[in-house]
Length: 393
Image (cartoon, rainbow, N blue to C red; front, side, top):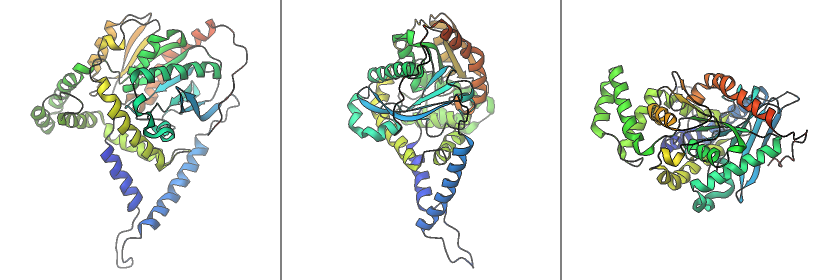
């Protein structure tokens, strides 16, 4: 889904150097030293992290709560598995970016999901804690084919480890490229696919988003947006300077700016996470973007797939100006699947899965959970074995 690394850098600089410094008054001759101010901030963050650890702890006797490195594709990759009842359907969430992990900050947003699903998050090759483990040594292996193989290997591991047959895939943005290829290649591993921020046609995406933004700006009477968007025109590629202007207005109209900066604060107070995870996320996004964005620029419907053997759903923000809603709708119309449905998330944009997570969950429970439960009833009895647990690191 791609964030502004420069903005993240400024936030880190602020929090690490002087954000906690006190202003000068008659009684207070000047700001406190940066290290003292940082210690004050660190105490507050530590308190909030401990509180969240208690608040979001899973307490059901049927719970599953694991966080570990798992051997996938010749490297160790970070995987978290959380749910209140291990008999619930398993949902594998594929993050966007490329390289933009959600595992450090989605603990609050996905808490309600963990009541009805066992939620798996995976820091993909070159991202987050997986990037921390390997560094840039994996750069040459950052290809779409390799990452699809990783996703399939992880799915096979989850089926054995958790004792289930069909895995639900919920894929966001860049993750939707991987997710569709995974379910097309090995449909027998999956019970349903849900795309959100769904990539549909990268070659047409910039022009379609540009027109949708102009239409939105006209409706709002936003003359500044109209002037800037008309001045730069539709970007020719993600590397065109016009792309930055378009992304800025996309985020503004979707309300995404507040959400994106909020994820930094969530990471700082997340159970088990720290500033290091923000740094890992930024560095992973830089590496992943460098290696993978050029590989996604010409992806169209035929590359994503037109025939699927499992149910396919798009839960798309009704006003997604990043992966345009109308292109996703047209793509779904063009595919063949045993069941398919386009579900608009009203009031949502590219990040509807997070910003409208409760509404998203309602649709998952209503439309997807029954498919997974029915899939489980048809599977060969695996007994009570859940397989060995990977060691937590």
